[in-house]
Image 1 (spheres, rainbow, N blue to C red):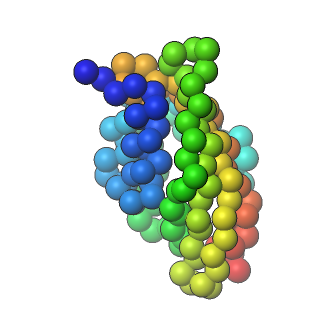
Image 2: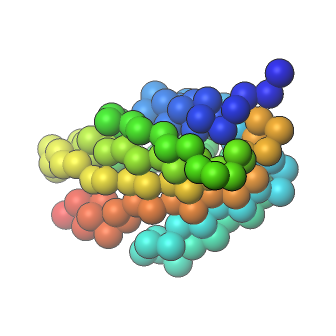
Length: 132
């Protein structure tokens, strides 16, 4: 039986926190679309599981680590859509800086796979901390 939307999002957030980069793309449909409206690097839209896999596995080279906490997943009137609200503890080893950011995901899951996600993160705060 396929995972329900809440379970998929919980696995996604958990996998990011544990840096399970190789497994994360398997939570997405082949033609999934992920949008980052607040991205600072111009990559506001990612299309396809393969591209997502490359981005996730490239995260091994990140200059920061995030750990999620305070996760709340809200059901919506649409059974395929959930809204996840959570905080990240962000650690920047190079500078020793630690801070928190708030996050919201609006995720559509069909047949146990993410088909669309709008991810609202504080990309600016993370970029500023890494550039320091």
